[in-house]
Amino acid sequence: MTAHIPRKIHSLLQLYELLPEHERLVVDVLRELVKGCLPAYCREKISYNVPLFYGNKAICIIWPATIPRGGIKKGVLFGFWYGNRLQDSDRYLTHGTNKQVFYRIYQHVDEIDIDALEKLLKEAAALDAGWKKR
Image 1: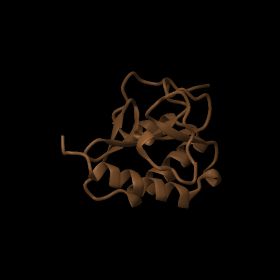
Image 2: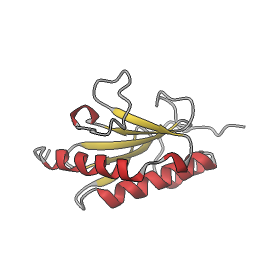
Image 3: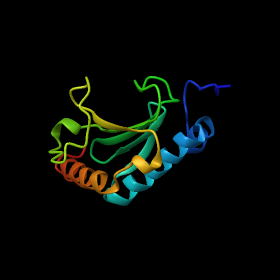
């Protein structure tokens, strides 16, 4: 039985209650990684019913397949909002059909390359620091 997805998710707790355990674990590890890498001025909010991290502009989004409109059938998408502006020298991200958001999809926690993501998060944080405050 699949959980009913409300029109608007208001909190992380509400989101976590809807996710199957394997997606919840991946989301949790990715969130902790992001919080550990981004500068103190950056914040997290629920946007599009999923965790979105932002500073001066949106930085990254974590989209579990359970939540509609993410464009994936299984796993958890980790997307950089301005991925098209990152060097991504290790070619870690998938470019897909979106010209701006570059991403990686994870099925299990052990697929997460912490070093590669930390490098990209630091690059994304430096890019965000260069944006003018909204």
